[in-house]
Length: 516
Image (tube, rainbow, N blue to C red; front, top):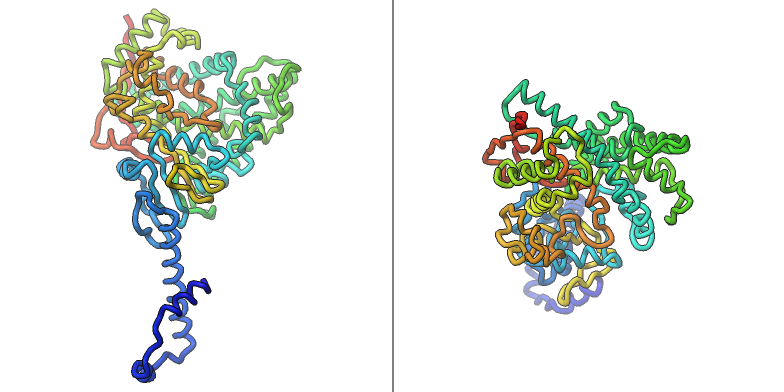
């Protein structure tokens, strides 16, 4: 700063004697208050100028606003994000820049740059959103990096083997039938259309809690976690008030997390006790404890505290809850709006399970339903639950030949454009499950574009769990119910929270399906 001032003074000519005489007639403010006022104003203008200079220096040649709104930047847009706003940002360039509360952000919209961020752990690590570590806790395993993360994840992969998934599938079938019966009973009492957004969330929450914790979690505990969990969802928006003071979304989320973790720790404790008594595994926690006690287990760790196990289950709950809900809600909406596709799903059900709609579905049944799987995959492509995942540049990140992301910046890989690339997905906005049934299709030839579950070392660990749950619910609903989608002007508009949902909540009417 001193060097800049010296350079500036050297470039300014000295005033003439005439001008000095003129200046002598000016009455300078004498009061200290006035001096402080002018000094404060000068400092503020200097800081604002510095803010703009830093933004422009970091932005360099990237597309984005030439100037940033002082202090808050794009905060107003981030408070109520829209798909139209995101699309404008993504379409402005493969890399583009913006600033929110002086957080410099680089958005990546191409498959190349998005995958580069996801696969560069030495330059960038997941930071989710500003409030994430406050809500999920900084020692949560999802924030681990490098070899420590790889080792931890390798042990958790054992919880998603085909054998384990088969056990979870039985729980999913039971919970799904319970909710379908409830939906039909509610519809019989009141046949008007109702939004399914929150009822589907309830279904997914109970499914996850029972898969993860089984009967080790009391019924009233599951209800309490479900009732409070929405506070966690809304606090994990891209931008929130950063301080966790009473009344804020982040504060309410922290209180909800405390309740959930207390119950999940109890479930972990009860699971250890049950397995020590030689009982058969009934849920994910039981499977984990059994694996750890197996002499043949070769994981990097053999012991986990109740709190550590609860933290892992809580992270799985966070990862599965709203993403699965989004995927399932759009699955119902897509099938209602495409009766020809729904008819093909039903035909496949009848072929694989003729007259057996009352028998629990098995994972082996699902393995014989390629069309259903293709529908789920395509529905998730058209409306990806997660459109982006914020990362933090831990050091200068040379993301391209012409641009380096500054250290400490947020760098965000976006998935939507990759999933709607017309070269890979002709008619990108159309729901075409058949594209996944042709091994020679551009969709199958370009797996790098399918970023629904991310890529790299932090790729979703529960891909099969999430997709088989969505498939199971849609399969059972197609067998047991008829549903009508009541369209509104907001049906095709997107509400963005942590994940995406139809703005009207997806209004459906359920009725029982008659079987021949």
